Length: 193
Image (cartoon, rainbow, N blue to C red; front, side):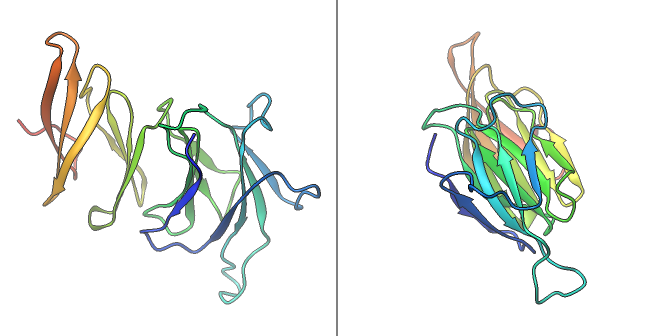
């Protein structure tokens, strides 16, 4: 797993800090993602989150600890924090397992279905956060899940460029044993012939 980092391209109303370990004294609010995870402590990403306080914008609301279960211990999968198109949402990634957390109501979260997410791309101009998996791409927008592409690869996607609302990439095709180019419309997630 890579060292956690912060990517804050989108405007956000929260502050967050990745902790080296779980605090000895837990904050009053502590949330575990996903709720049904076993052995959550082993390698989990521990994040202290300070949400915005809508009643007093100059102050933060009561902080909470987000414990995000580790996906894979592999240096090739991402780990860290990303801002999202919704200012109150935080994306925490632990060993390729990605969690979208509503910082105003941290009991509400979405776990991105890719196991693992291999790459994350913030596209501020398109108002999308892209999650790249082994065979397809999922886009997260200001209203949540925006789209998911069709199968683009048998195993492995490479993004080669993004311009004018269009994503260009390569996907490995098992039948031909070669990289096959594809183009995706970022508004719809549909393949452009």
